[in-house]
Length: 262
Ligand code: F6R
Image (cartoon, rainbow, N blue to C red; front, top):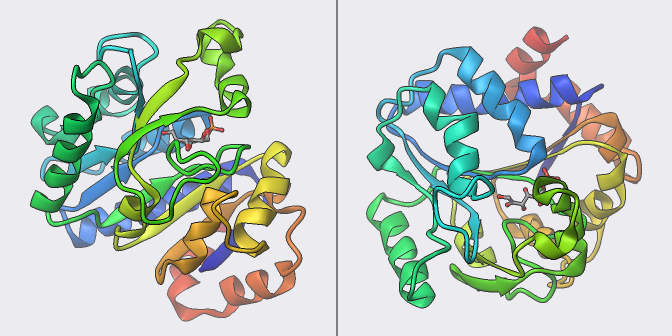
C-alpha cells in the first residue's frame, strides 16, 4: 500500500483524477470500478473537465440501495448519470450499476459478478471510506471473502448518508446491494480517496490498524497494488506520515505527479 498525502482536498482529488486519466490513456478500454458519495463528486467533475474519452471504457459501480429503482433521484444510478455518465462519451450499455429494485436480489448479485468476470475483471477500483469503516457498503463483520450480495446498513452509515434524504436517517434505505470485500480485492488496482477531518480516525484504523472485519476497509492492506490518497485533514491521525511523504517525494514513478501537482 502507498499513502499519498496532499496539502488540500483539491490536490488530493487532482491526483486521483490523474491516476484514472493515466490508466485510460494507457488502456482506452479499461474497466473501471466506481464509487459514489460526496467525496467522489469532485473526482467526477474533474474527470469530465479533463475531456478524457470514456468511449471504450466499461464501468461497474460498487453498490446500490435496495428498494430504489434506477430512476429514483437518490439511486446511485441517478447519481452516476448526474455526475459522470451524462457528461462523457461513455456507451451507456457499458455502464453497470446494481439494480436495487430487482425482484431476485441474489440473482442480481450473481449476475453482476458474472458480468465483471466477462469483462475480464476490474482494472482500477475507486473507493471511498465510510465512517463505519466500510468500502462499498461492506459494513463491519463483512467477510473478506464476500462477493456481491445484500447487506444491512449500520445506523452510522444511514446517519452519514441522511443528507441526501432530507437529513432524515430513517428515510435512508436499510439495506443495499454491494460488491463484496473479496470482489473489491480482485481488482487489479485499488485507489481509495478520503478527505476531511471526520475521516481521520477511520482512515488511521484502515491503513495502520489491525486487519479486521470490524473495519472492512482494513482489507485493502492485503492488496498488492493499493493507493490511499488523502488530504491533510483525513491524514492527521496517521503515525507513519514521515515515511509516506518520503516515499512520495522520492519514488521515481511519482515524479510526474509531483511536478504537475506542486
Ligand atoms: C458509495 C460507497 C461508500 C462511500 C463512503 C464514503 O458507493 O461505496 O463506501 O464511498 O460511504 O461516502 P462519502 O464520500 O459520502 O463520505
